[in-house]
Length: 209
Image (spheres, rainbow, N blue to C red):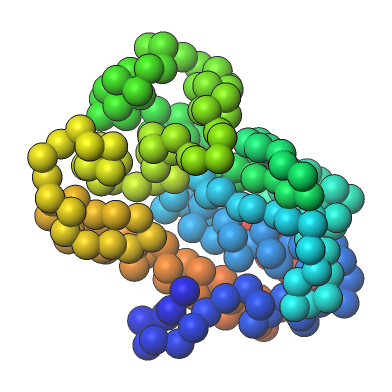
């Protein structure tokens, strides 16, 4: 991920700073949920694998020890969407933002066409989404990640809008809003790296989120 100035920005720049495993995991979760914590994105997917990162720690193992408690302190909800050998896929989200998203007419129409029962409560909607998680992600997951509806239906082949670019996702039709949104998401990550660079105890940031 690059900042507006072109500088490569990633969690590896700050993850090595923290001696305690809990702090290391907190910084990882802060980085990967930066847009959600800022309120500009309803949810994010995070993959955790049984491996040692550059910081010298196994974040999959640290999640098993500390993850749910850390997210509870940040006021974030989470769901394990898939488990595979030595890895898991987390969906981190804010309930208020997801509920607002699912109340939109465009979201309801897309999910209904994708085979979701109408007017499902949040938990049952997420149950259905989780049941569809296989080797390939269900295309409607873009809604839950805050991508514009026009881009989600474009990727699903439900519109004649042409593909006009790419960001963190494929863009269809007028790219203006999509590119602005992509820049906003990226800036949240850049800002979080800057905050973590000046914070010795990331748990403070997490609790203040």
